[in-house]
Image 1 (cartoon, rainbow, N blue to C red):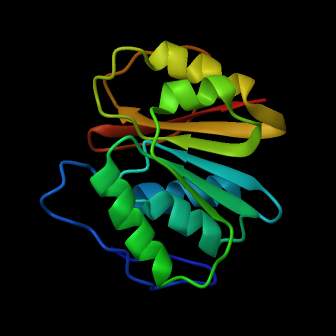
Image 2 (cartoon, one colour; image 1 turned 180 degrees about the vertical axis):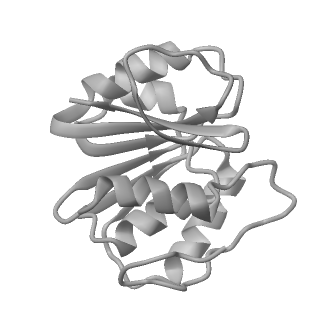
Image 3 (cartoon, one colour; image 1 turned 60 degrees about the vertical axis):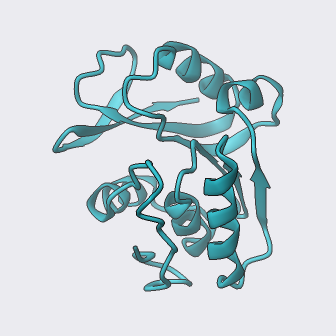
Length: 168
């Protein structure tokens, strides 16, 4: 899997086929980052980071800091290995439960979440994430197209996936 644009364009990110995550596809990432436009001087939070590809894309596109939150230690180890090949010194890596992290963390300019499809408490995730946005911030959720949620704007549908967002 490769970074699509920015400083680290075409940089490969390590994906372990044995891991049971669902990395965000290139078409979804392109739509997501096209909708965001500039990440200059923005603090970016990647929840349920999985492969880390979204956070790496954010760093490539100028994010001030990128924080990866992933509960699986093996996944986080893989993210750290991928980060070693990128010349960027503003990564934070935390092995944590995303919902617990959101209850105590600082605010961010951009929060991206790609939880496992079928996560029971999406409403709690949305509520917590929206409270942790800086003024003018945006929360983007990658979820199943079958989720019925309220108060969002839609970026698009991509097969079984949809991208939704909420603004501060």
